Length: 621
Image (cartoon, rainbow, N blue to C red):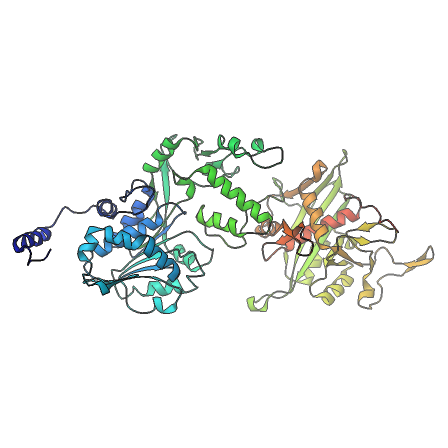
């Protein structure tokens, strides 16, 4: 309305607007009155009670001391709506200071502008009252208000985050490192430093451990969403994973083994009735009990320290309208994809559903070894038939200040009265020098001929080391089996004297037996082994050998040992030549050395005739 059309009414409206209205209690209350969400399946008008976990993160952006607010949330939990409400509130109520709304790239920003943001701004009356009347001041992604400038953009281009100062900033999807390149988030934050009272609101899923987003979040105080437990009346964090060893943490549970079809696939109709959440106090809530889940959300709150920079976080399992059964289906699909070598679905599940910053090496733990209550003991098994040792040499990295070093494993083997094989880990760890590597075998009374040393790295040095101490040298190959003179095929090649490998003199005299020269049994040997087959043997051994093996690992093993045991996985991959699916061992982590040493031990146990898969001699044509 202009004064020319009705001067008195125009004057009255201006006067009425100048009278302070009722104080707004929170951004959420304001948004409930003024923000409409076009196309929303939940509500045409913003209703914070639908997503109560966004209330405090959104409202806290107005605290005087708050400079940075991070909301690390699962997908489908209303996080982007929080950013849209914050945007409307700033544009409608702040007196000055430019506003920036950052997305990972221009394409995403443009799509969001067309689909939602422009429509939300035009439907918000307080924003439109301040909006420029000139058409050219409102263009795609840019609005030149009388009191501020608003820009919605992608950050992929360096120039987008390296110009004018910004007082109010909203950042979205910062987990996407293809858009938010290294250093870009810090660069965006730097745009606000000219204002002592700046405000940054960052909404994102979790991302890669060690990423810029993760580093920034680590510098903040953490407040986690807690629900009100119907059982004990206390507040609990809801976690997706249930750990049988730590039931006091709670978690999502279901009866998978009783819900499989005859073909081994999961019967999800049957599984649905078993899906439940076990609270830390032991109280059970079933997926189908929607009213209880809703009440838990409405009674929830964030618990944790405050400060000028705070991260709010929750997992998808705490979002009452997200089906737990669908989460389980998504998890199973991710695990199945991982078996075929596609790791991305599992990364997305961890980061987007569990809201955990995870490295590319992180995998679900499938216990390859079961830790016992025993502690590592030099005495080992009293009835052992052998004590075996394995060493793996590493060159080290000069850039890290590392000199060459070793990893080693010592394991006892015994035959029980009932015929089962019993193995026990006696020692494992890292050794910094040749002297330490040799000495650990000597101190544990491992016969030199029962020690194998991989010679794939620093080969000549390993040969000399083995000759010096009487150890056997081995080297991996791509074959599944090696032919032997008797017509058999084994996972190792026929042994030969090690001294011949480097044209060194024999340590012991040769003997002439049955028409040929043979080495003294104390002479160190060399042989090739099948890389994949020794891994198959260790997997079989450590899983109990179908009830024929007790593979025991003391509970006080090092963190290195635990990590190395998760370093490789058997996956199905399609052979590009044959088109057939084949099972292959895939290395998941940089360090796999103790795992490989255990595989060497498994090979020695088979060479001793204690285990092994029978391989018939090849038929001769």
